[in-house]
Amino acid sequence: MSYATGALLALVAGSLVFSGLAVVAAWRYLRARPGRLERPVPISLLKPLCGLDEGLEENLRSYFAQDYPEFEILFAVHQADDPAAAVVEKLTAEFPGVPARLVATGEPPYPNAKVFALDCMAAQSRHGLLVMTDSDTRAVTPQMLRVIAAEFQDPHLGLTTCPYRAVPGRSAWSVLEAVGMNTEFLAGVLVARMLEGMRFAVGPAMAARRETLVGIGGFDRVKDYLAEDFMLGKLAAEAGWGVGLSSCTIEHRIGAQRFRPNLEHRLRWVRSTRRSRPVGYAGQFFTYSLPLALLLVALQPCWWPVAAFAAAVRALAAWAVAGWVLHDPLTRRRWWLVPVQDLASFALWAAGFFGNTVSWRGRRYVLYKDGTFGRV
Image (cartoon, rainbow, N blue to C red; front, top):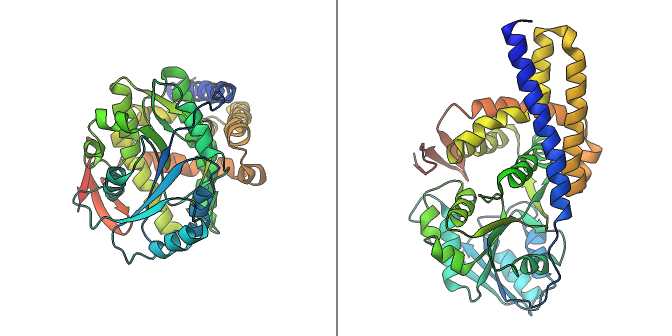
């Protein structure tokens, strides 16, 4: 056996261990559920907006329709004439019983416009529990706020993040990305949660106590970071607060991007991830069991049974996340895209080691080694 063959076998073995851990982690996550909500606390829901995302009205309506005794919704736009403001006005009239306000923030004075919007809304919010969701998310149940409030009955919990099920638009590239998000990304989160606990936050929906945010220095601490969600969870954990992965799943509507904007979006993700957690990003190599097994077969065709076994284990891990946890109909229908997405993801992961610029909402930014970023 050559050195290259032995090295690839070791890497494939490591990746199979990861897939097995993903199955166990998904099972353990499903076992943990919050207790019954005893004392509802008032909630401020913060929604940064910028333009008309695909399906924006239905996305926002799902939050107005929450079955919760006391909550308010704050929306933020850069300028009052943003087209999203008209959608907010329509829904405010449709749901007169839900206190809702629109905040025009002006242009952000620092790189992360979303953080600036959250900061402005938090300053005007009334309640101590803040739920922050992106404009391209949709609550899948009117019980979302009840579930989150029940989880925060644990006095140690300072911040939690919601797992999300990606829903693509009418674009082959968005379908491929959604399959990857639903079978690959959450698997890494679940394994990290099982092995070391949640020491970070992810994604488009988070909730935090106001005192937690104040204790870590407020949004000002993350204003220069592209991955502000990751940093908020990291800072909260370092300050001694519990960071959780909520049992409430949301939908992340990723839209119908064509090839180039989808590629730019995914490159922004991998490049920012590499700088936010470089060790974890390098370790992501072990999540690619199928590409590694195919490399082994390309080197030594007689090892094809290893590739077949890797495909079976990867399928089980993908279904543990997409099927058991996310109840994802897309992966059920398009299961054959999983290996295609794995190969694309492997190529993007490798590309993440190169380049330091990203495109975000039509603007170009440069990423620095510490995870901060600035305008080009």
